[in-house]
Image 1 (cartoon, rainbow, N blue to C red):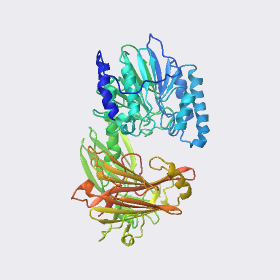
Image 2: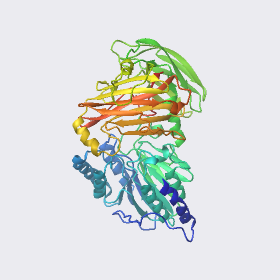
Image 3: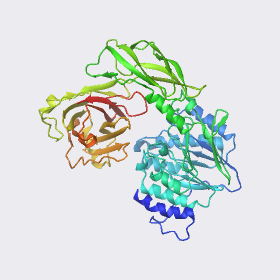
Image 4: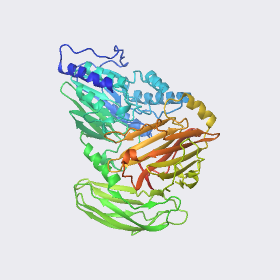
Length: 600
């Protein structure tokens, strides 16, 4: 982000009113304006803000929201993105065209000639052809700005950016110019689809996007994508996450934490830009679902009920045994409820089925249980349970989830490691430990086309993978022109380096031998020359490919190597028109990465 760092002093000069700011190093401005004209003063101006329609779209709900919002007689309509389902291949882009026309027709029928500004979401723009289609049918560029009375509305396209690090210098450069240009406006309002501000390290001092917003005196940032409401104020920047307008709420059973159908109203005049949430005949202020409540929900869902010894060898899963459950009261109120395991569960019989839970605020306790599994029962999903946590003295959060069985394998130590050439013909691979089959995410059944073996010789964990059932003729043609890791056939390895901090490394390797190393959550990211140290190799066959990998554990742990390593394996490939994925340790729900264990 060197361009952004060079531009920040320039932007600061514009903000503070310097007489002679130094010249900007960016190219001449060729920005274009949307087709809708700027709204004239005076105000106040009323802007309806629509959340995500897609992600399981319900057109009945979407149209009902449009009609209800139209009764407010807004001066403008703004979408935070994901109006269509999208993601069609380039040769089926006309399907997206038809969906765009249907959705835009619904909006026009509800609002008439009211100006419409659309923020590109990941379902709206996922490729260059889809971007061209967006601009053709929506009528303005993916990055655009317009004056709304006394304010400047700036739409930044982050549809293809999973994190701040994936925003290009050109995108941030454009945002710098727009904010600098709007310093004489009463407010500066930025709209983008993905809530990068809520992803670590986004929205904190020292992150490029947040620094640009601070320096440009952005007042309000509107986002969508996560299908629930959330807000926070950081360094005087008001961040708002808008939930779905027709899409499926992320946790539909929990409207108390922002998971409900909604839209927004933005009122603008020379004194303020005020945002409110609206649902089913009621208007909520912008602090109804604060960031702290979202974080409390996260703790309840993923850390409040855990089972650290609920482990199974996937090749020899035990049919009966004992395990403990740790319950932590993360709330600020006394907790008094009953932990209930599902009474009728085909795969699990838990004894006792109920357990009284009485905990003070911040207190934890451990409880013992037994399990029995009938013949042929699968490990996943795990035993289901329910337990209520007090968000306040009157509002309860009913947690309905399942314990996640943790897969483990004891990896054999060998006397000599293999030659890393992508061929699994070394004698050591006949001694290696079979890790177990991957589970298809869509079908919940074993994937017979991916075989993984592993062995260990300090400081390396050696992994050999056979990836069969690939269209190698078509794959070679695609690989020859692909830029980056091929999404249609690649292998992923994730290692949790520091479970408490969620410091992890994720490797993606495709059939062309391209590797992407993604250190996630590290303050100082570890850097390893994978190619130069010959730590992996790939070979291609007639109907598949093989991968050989040496994972240098000392690079992450130093001389004190762990006895057990949280790890997961995943394969993603294109099968019968859709992406099929299979994992070793299946994820039972969205949330933190799911890891199995290998014992060294």
